[in-house]
Image 1 (spheres, helix red, strand yellow):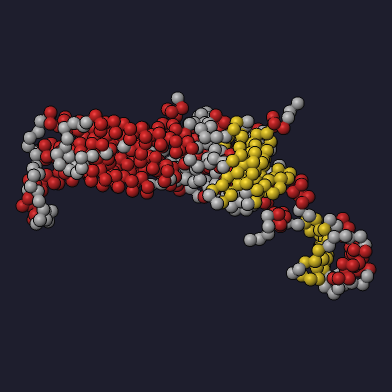
Image 2 (image 1 turned 30 degrees about the vertical axis):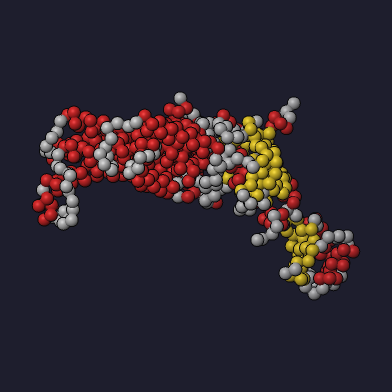
Length: 310
Length: 261
């Protein structure tokens, strides 16, 4: 029988990092399972990159612990990193070396076979730039090079910090497909951070939302979609108070007034009762100037969770 | 095996680097400068006509001979060792921070200490090539100038002294490597190299010079006064300790310090 411990690939326990008076990560507990794409979502400065650095042993936790593939990460740990590919924060490469040479360095250091460089160049569509110096690449292609470096040695775990940075929309879709394929077909575990909810929502099997260094919520994709509430919005500029009373009498218990538009009512969890809403309001002789069925934008949900627009 | 792989990548990183050629160009200016000096000493009248000799220039004590030429060559290799070699080490280590690649080296199936050792080996090979190239250049220029007083023994002794100064200078650079890693860039090690050059010069005027690592090369090459014939055992111990301390500090820094690049 497979236990949770068998399938947990990345695990953090009470992980904390403090820089003098700044608490960057506060008691973080995460479990990322084998073969899943875990989206680590948060605003800029929420603690995503600090967490990723601790996962990779680039910085030491103030307290708590990290393990990857069952190996506790500490100073001097090397064995596990042959099975981990990573991209931290910004794309970087040796500017005087070509794309091919930059990847050759990674190949030698990870002990990957000689054919790995050509393979990954093709996989990341870098063939056209293979002999171009990295210093002359566009930001998007530099990002591709960094992603190529991360996957070159066919790692079991990918830790990617904002992998879609600097990519154009087509590039974002392409990388999303690549990561999905790696997870689905090769069982690669992907831990990716992002501050763009839509990007994570499209790709991740599970999402952790971090704010001010603390994990606010952890949910799977279906739960996220469900959280993004469906609602019906009606516009009754003549008498919104009466409309509210009528709808309450008809069994619509929860309603919200839009403070910016006093004639608008928002009725959550009512998408399947649109016709009934219309019948109640028009039947009572109210002037109904608008009726729309909507979903709360995922961004709105994220903002609501993390404290609104700052 | 692991170290061989790391070392090969460190040499690969130098490909198309302008700094390697720049360092060669920089050091090779030294013998050309000495040659110009020798010519001025030999032809003060023509030099004055060309504006190369100031009215207040004091060239007493300098003669256009092989002994004088070779002692200046040793001086250049020694000072080059204290400054240019520090620049090389600052580049080899500091570029990883300047180019944002340091973080890529720290989560690999390779011990971080191997990067420190490999970079120090690269700096040693680079420095050795520079020194040999410049010594050959200097000897060729000296022969072309037709200076009097040449002997194979004199040249061999001067070359031996220059190589010794270059080697001793190398023992001091792991500390520069540590400061580069600590400061994550070029400026701290360069400031350190310039400061220790000044301090080393200052200490040569005191009785502590043989015990202060940065004064030992100036003592040996005669940066101030006459070059010493041999170094006391204590100086060698100080140099060995400085080397060991630098290597240890650099390795501990790269293994244990937070990398927030």
